[in-house]
Image (cartoon, rainbow over all chains, first blue to last red; front, side, top):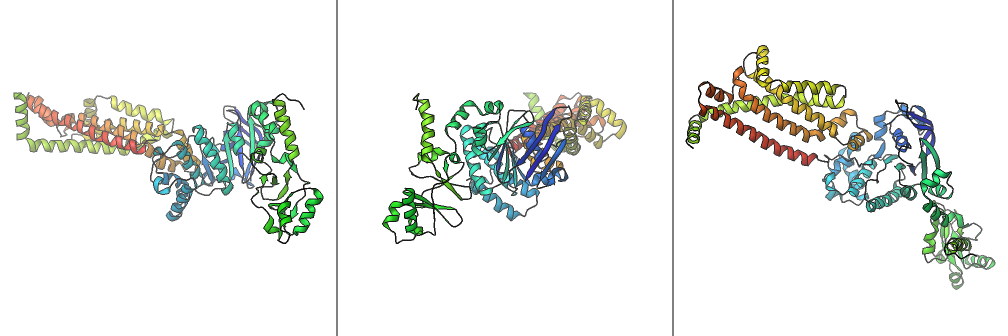
Length: 371
Length: 214
């Protein structure tokens, strides 16, 4: 865990870049530092690998004071991706990706395996790309190499300084998607600096919005969109985006926790009677640990009362995370939307009446029809 | 036309001697350039790395270049006496400027992003220099080497005044005997040497640019 306590940074010329920053970067999450230029977001990030040192306060990584860690060792333990890509132009792709493992004196075989693995991870064929030079690759490919170079030594923490801002819009979107996908597997603590709100909303688990060396607001993208702390936040997020967000709260706003559900060990008869008493034709089914399994429908249950419940459950009906967008359900053809925690623990189902009401509010008001 | 035929005949008749002089000429230049690389690269790097040293080092090598070549060799003569090594030292001092300056520029020109990446992934300042900054400055260094070589080939022709050899001996004899054929017999190969050095090092420079270009 990375903790910043009352961090101040004053430059020799008296300019105070950071003013009393209190922050915790969440472990295994994408933490996005965002704000207008000169707000101190990059400075904050560079404190973490000691490219910049703070003048006051306390910065600890897993409880250890950062000033007690040798900066060279510190940097080798952290991935670093920079805006201008920063690949070494005179080294092959292989040597670029292998740069940190080589500094750490890994043996050759281990490095070779790792480089291949990483190249495959970003869909670049090792046999084709290993021996190429950076200038023989497209911008998007180069930054993919930049990202995997940061991953090569298996760091727990990765710093990314506006890594995608120099790319064309299409490559940028692709790399953002890939990063989110990648993060599901690697679960690193990522500190990501950007000035692009769309990017932040897309990839962040936690957004830290800064201005003039201070943290203005921090929270999930949803927090910022639904309850901006002040006018500056609203302005920075943009009226349009806020308006959109208002129309579409995530799943969590529609959870019906009282909706009845069945446990996989129950008999089919019990499940049928449960449906009858509650006048439902579908019920979510959970296992002994309250994890979501699938949906049991009354129609199937009545047809085969002799079968165990496990065989009746329709496992194809997907569940949504709390933070998922409601549109995803609206766009699907399912008639029920179970909602789960990230660890699959069942929470409830989407309250469709409430959803209808909200949709009506939104589109009704837009078309001028009052209800 | 007759003159060219005469020159050709003279050079053919004295080919063995001229070849010896050419080899001597080349050797003086190679020794001098080698010395200039050994001394100039570290000086260039020092200048690039320490902002306060840069003006001192750069103006010093600049001044060396400004001393007229014949005066420089005469001054060196006072300290080192007549002979081959005095010439080499003179040529070395002349070659310093392009090499120091180009190494300096080359190291300074390495893109900020690249040096930041090197630092950011945990290279020590020395590793950064050896693995990133110096290799990336090689195309600049090669350009400096090319200039230095051409200058050295030209300046080496006055070597005989201080007891050196090389093609200058033929030129100076020609002047003493008022024999224009002998002047040309020294000057033409010397010019050819300069052109060849320029061409070959030009190709090398292009290759390194291709290899190290960002």
